[in-house]
Image 1: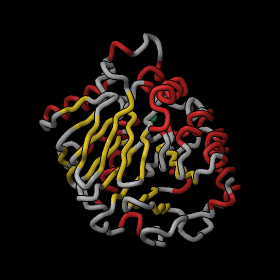
Image 2: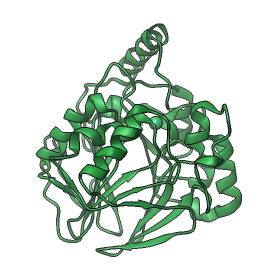
Image 3: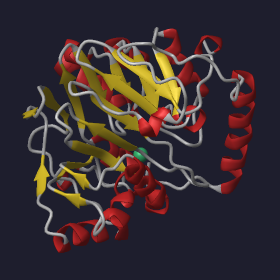
Image 4: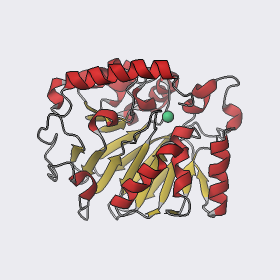
Amino acid sequence: MGNRTNSSVRAIVNVFFLLLIALLGWGCASAPVASSPAEPAVESTIFEYKRADDELLMWFFFLEDDDRSGDAILVMLPNGETMLIDAGIEAAGSQLKHHLDRLGVTHLDYAVATHAHNDHIGGFLPLFGSVTMDDYVTVNVPHSTDTYARVMRGLGESEIPITYVEAGERFSLPGGVEVLVLNPPAGTTGDDVPPGSDAAGLNNLSLVFRLDYGEVSFLFTADIYRARESALIDTYGDVLDVDVVKVPHHGESTSSSSSFVDAMSPEYAVITINILQSLPIYQRYGKSGAQAFITGIDGTVLLICDGSSIAVHAEHPRDSDSLF
Ligand SMILES: [Zn+2]
C-alpha cells in the first residue's frame, strides 16, 4: 500500500463496510465452511487447534487498526517449523505478538517480507528481541522509509541473516513442502523501481511465490498490480492455477484482474484487509467459483492442509452461501 487512507475516505469506506457486514449477516453463527481433514467447529479452535503430524497449518491473521493493518500470515510446516509471511504494520505488532504467543510460537524458521512497505514489515519491529528468527527472506528492493531503516537495523542487531530471492528459485522445505518464486524477475534491484511510481513500483516488485504441499497449492501474491499479474500470466501460465490464493494487494481494485483470477481459479481466496476496499473484487472471486474470505469480516482464517485436502475455518463463521 504505502499511502495512508485519509479520514474522510476512511469514514466512507467504513460505512460501506458496515453496510456490507449487515448485508452478509455477519454475526450469524453457522457451520464451519469445510469438514475435512479435521473438524474444529468453534472459533476458539482457530488459536487452539493442535496440529497433526502430517498437517500444514496457515493462519491469515486479522489485525485491528484505524489504518490499514496489512498482511501477516503464519505457516506451520508439516514438521512444525514456522514461517511468517509479512508482519503487518508496526502499530498492530502487539496483536501479532499476542497471536504468536497464543500459538506457542517464539521462533520463526523463516521470516518472509514480501516487500518493504510499512504494512508488511512494520510488525517485525516489535518481534525483534522476543521472537527469534533464523532467516529473513525478502526481495532485493530497499525502501527509503524510517520503518525500513529500523527493520534493517533490527535484523543487524539480532544478527539475523538476510536471504534475497527472485523469480526462478526453488526451495524444498522440511515435510515435503516446495516453494517456487515467481516474482520479482531475476536480477531485480532497487534500481528497477520506476522513478515517481509511488507505491506501485515497490508493489509490482514484491515477492510472489507458489507453495505446494502434496497435491495442494497456494499462491502468495503480495501487493502486485494488474500489470504484473498480466506479466506473470504470460510467463507462468498454468503454474498460477492453484487451490488457495492470498489475494493481491488486500483485495483492492488495483489488482485481481479477471484474467488473473481466471488463471488462478482458486478454490479459496483470502483477502487480508481490515478496511474493505473493493466489493467488486470480492465478488469477482465468488463468481469465479472461489470461497472468499475477508479477514476484516471473518476474523483470523485458519487453513488446515494434510497434503490432499483443505479445511478452512474462520474466527467468525458465517453462511458464505449468501455472498455470491
Ligand atoms: Zn500492502
